[in-house]
Amino acid sequence: MSRKYGVVVLLVLSSFTALILAGCGSSNQLAPRPVGNFTNANFSGTYAFIVSGTNAGGFFTFAGSVQADGNGHITAGTLDINSPGTTTPLLNLSMTGTYIVHADGRGTATLNPNGSNAFTLDFILLNNQHAFVVRFDNVATGSGSMDQQNSSAFNLTSLAGNFAFNISGVDAARNPESTVGVFTVTSAGSITAGLQDTADNGVIVNGGGTGDPVSSGSMSSPAGGNGRGTLTISSGGTGTRNFAFYVISSTQIRMIETDAATVLSGDAFNRTSTSITGNFAFTASGSTGAVPFAVGGIIDTDGSGNVVSPSVEDANAGGTVNTGVALTGAFSSAATGRGTLSMNGASINYAVYPSSGGLQIIRIDAGLTVSGTAFQQTGPFSTSAINGRFGGSLTGVDLNFGIEFDALTQFTADGNGRITGAMDLNNSGTVTTGLALSGSYSFDSSGRSSAAAGALNTAARGQTVVFYAISSSRVLFVEIDSSVAVGAFAQQQ
Image (tube, rainbow, N blue to C red; front, top):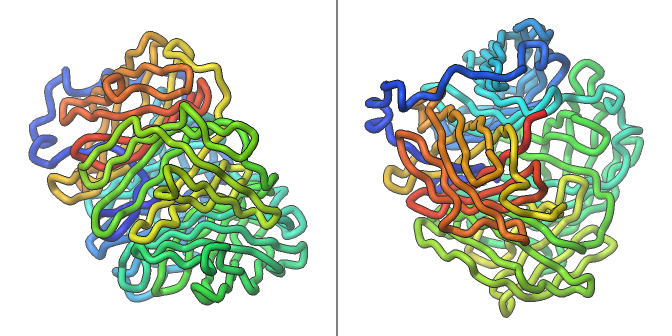
């Protein structure tokens, strides 16, 4: 999900003001010294990352690859930056830097790209392979993720097959835009087929309801050192778009558009199946008109093409909150890799592209620019099942001030509904580390918490949230108060 107030979509979560944070300094407002078993050695190898957010020029996104030596040094790296607020994209910049990992898995990296200003990433390691990240500078904020790369997949033979992609950002007029679809790439790098659905500032482009056909395209062979390549996708509805991509594995690539007008970024995952069956937890975000929008819920299917009880959603449209809305309806899937979800009398409609990274979903109702992901659940679920140390990410919009905030969390869930830990926050350029975090949670058998049971609090502000468990180790959530936000957390290993 991508990101911003009036212009972007979202990635998720909390909200605090500079005036309040300026007063945060007493010991009871800051978390204790980090404890745990993480060190610099846990961040070692080659990692691909992506971040989207806002700066003085509006929306920005960047993606790249870094080589961490396990001793606090970024010995090499590559970076692509695209923001409509600048004249042209900055592409394939070389980069070095430094980093530190604290005992609880939170860390900071300072990156120095040639040809651009240095910037800081705050991150929380889930394990040696995966991390959530936030841009942590006074001039910009944004959220994303970072994953260790598998160099054995740095070739077209490994990547050949079907990929479902989910990208979002802004169009040439800096209005929110999202595209979700699928393409087929050969071992020679030719894109031979595909479909996509696009929501551009509430205008749906999808071939009249069956998907906008991908007419052509190509993928270059990724570079051996960093897994970077180039990708072109053409369709009748959106024309030709150019991307840089970074290989994470044979089943996942990271994409950033390199055109100077429309700027989209996100991930693509291998399409392993075209079926839609089982129970799913989901979140999606974006906008309805100029109003930020976030939604989450549980979708249960009966194996016969029906959405059944206890399917439910919780939505926040610019502070107008509706929780516990029952969902019923039907879904369909096709061999093309595109399916549909139609619920509540066809008032809620999604195009759905199944992938190894979950169901990539986009609302196809006029007036909305909303996309996200649904993940198949693995139960059983209960409050006691969520127990241990977790790392999380949140991004969203504070409606009181019209600004973006992005945050990382590290906390312990005690299995009895209590959360304690720390939060690092970038509140539209005001950065604060180590805020004391407390919270509460409770899960029913569907994997959903009640609206009254979910909270994430710091001295800066309290947040009311609804949680949706994917498993005992992965949880999504949406904020349902005066901020519109979505987030996720996962167990640390």
